[in-house]
Length: 231
Image (cartoon, rainbow, N blue to C red; front, side, top):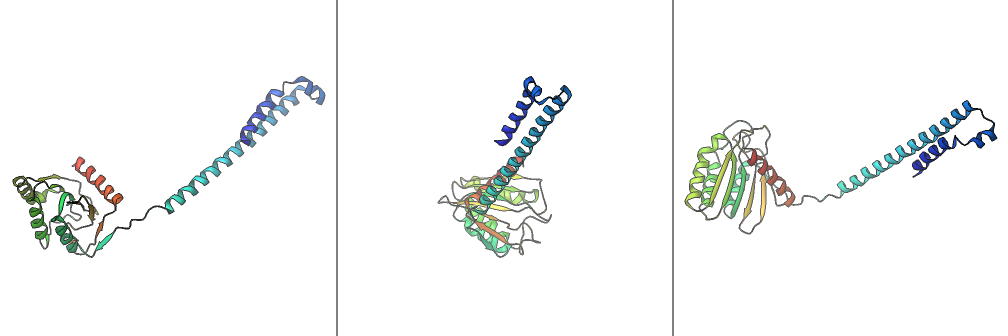
């Protein structure tokens, strides 16, 4: 507000410089009149600019402070369980498939090795086929080329039993990719299991995480949709 007043005073000084009786009273010649008017106008312009800049800085600091308060009060992710290793992760997923009606899954190798670990994947393959034998199940898989054989088997089982299984092959193999599976059960409850293994090298040692947090599940659903569209 004060900066606006300063600009107005500056303009007033410049206009008032043409007021002849004032200069006659002060007994200033024309050169001094011009210098005096210009200097006074510039002075108030500088003062106004400085005040305006200071006000903007204060508003910026206030906005940052408000943002900090917002971040400090963000809701916590309370629903997060940890499975001790990859084998436990696969067994957990296999058990959850028994009541599943909708699955969104990724199987992308993180190290270039065979994407299916023969040491413990037979359980997952059997339970997936059993799930697809139920009518009305919808399963989407994002895989790599070497998984096509077993995924074609899944598709055959689904087709014969009135379920839907579809997969897309991706070439976007990125080191450090976090695989995940989103499971919806017969009651409509959703959960996401992420970090589960894709190779014999990392499968047994890496931990897996399970969450029923809606916002986290929504994040992984968005990632899955982007991967599915781009594959």
